[in-house]
Length: 445
Image (tube, rainbow, N blue to C red):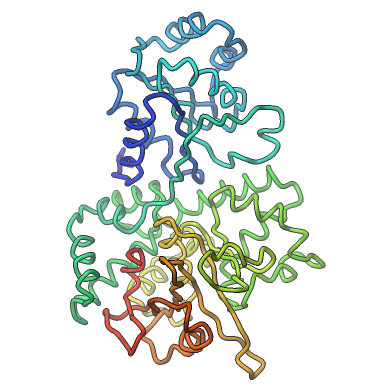
């Protein structure tokens, strides 16, 4: 497999931290495992500093760990570090990286003293960083700035494919409130479905670039999912976290208005799983979309922590998990998905994709349901807060016929609603007050 270094937008945020902090804070890059944290931080340290040292605590030696046992004499500490790592240290021009710092909490605690010393910059990477058992016996440093690293977004994926033009054209169309016509839209949708299938995990993207074989990509994604399963088993011995994670595609396919815990774990209420769900969310492998009981600006104020939907943080992994019952997902399934010709209703895949795109742009996820008067419910898939208004979103996997839930929501909360959106697979257009946008533009909302 090629040793690819992908362009990531977070790099610019890291530059801003370096320029603004000037050593007054450390930087913590949080994200799910295999999302590219270590590669990104190594690239940054190599490009932006005169020298750097990396402590990889997933495989650190006894000598490396022993270094952090005594910080009483900083000159002695740094002399030992020089000898151990065999590198020169330059004041304000050296980065010291703590990779997978959650595996050695003492090093994270040392950040306070190291930042106070002020000679060098410190960058940490971590997964499941705030699991209680990892921080019970240490002082969490307040001298940390935190940046979340998500799976590669659509623009980053296009960059990896060598396409530096398309996203700029889409932004231009968005600003001018127009599409590019049906024939161009079909081509754009095919390109976007490739992103849905491969996903944004760098390892999967690398495999696709090397092989152009979607079955090979699927095997790579299965390896990542097995890694997540093992992690869940280690931090939750009951097996409930793993069971909830594996059930996400079936839960969304069932079109229920909230995650149905009892169908996964018998005789269990949502309240009993709050800590486990929090842990799963903290792992960055899933995204939680809470029901907003009173949708208004400040959506979090009315969020119902017992009523929510759960999405996989990477839709490429979601697709593989949805077909987990096979030893591997045959190319024919991927080809049908790519051509939008699989007979199954894939609305839940589109919904997961939109959730991922909204989160990548810094949005938190909320939705809303209310009765329609006929023993059923209307449902608005996502709500965004924009200035003094809320923007409701309905997601459809195909062309649209009606958007009744969206219409009824806008009637019910007319004074609160700003723009209203239907996300689907056709070209940009409007239908009365509703703005219909192709899913590849969802990240521009």
